[in-house]
Amino acid sequence: MSFGISRLFAARRHRRLGLVLAVLTTVALVLESIGSWQIFWENRYYLGLGLLTSWYLTVSAILIGLGGGIILAAARLYGPIGLRHISIAFIEIVRAIPDLMVIFWIYYGVPSLTGIQFGAMPAAILSLSIIASAYLAEDVRSGIMSVPAIQAESAHASGLTGLQTFLFIMLPQATRNMAPAMIATFVRIFKVTSIVFVVGVVDFFRAAIIINNIVNEPYAIYCLVAVVYFVSCFGLSQFVRQFGSDQKFSH
Image (cartoon, rainbow, N blue to C red; front, side, top):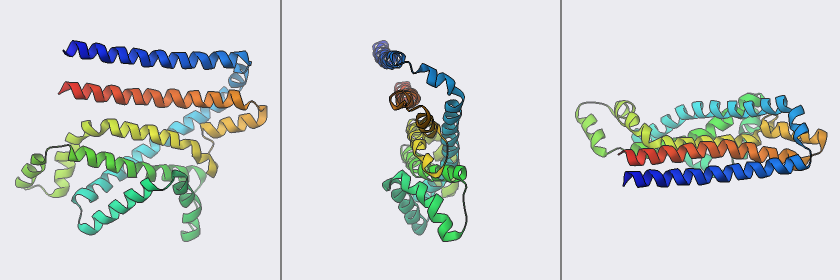
């Protein structure tokens, strides 16, 4: 039975890989037919720097947002009633409003209210971290709730506080269950980096826009942008699916 399931997942992976190769080959042939590879080669360092900036923003936001997400999840699950309401309100508001609005609030709203001015890069990292923390808080909460309640009851019976139970008993056990959702959030934040150019950050998308303004080859440039985002997000998504299937059949 397990052999048949393994063959099924292998066949699906091969079909997805074939689809990706077909898409990339088609795009490569189209770009070759319009003679656009030279544009990419001449601007490869600038585009590469923009892509590294996008990944730097993503990784920074996920690391900071994970800390914030754990605090929000702990407050929502184990905090006093007032703190629970604050945590819920923060999570729901950030998840409900457009991501671009969060970026505008941090870059334009905070300075006008407090006089504290952020540079473009710090504002982008802070904005993405806030967005990531709201989504990761729900990922952590879901992972915690997937752990049998008897674990928390046993920890309380042994004298651990709610915070100690969360940090040392529930959170370590929940990590495996919440990993796929966290990686999905990673994919989401990577895609959101494509809008931080509105505050002046030269990410991958902004680098492509600047190059297109110079060479005026929108079809070729934005085909490349789509391919890079597709390959990056598809690769992470496949990792999520593979991780999830491995965890499902390992129990």
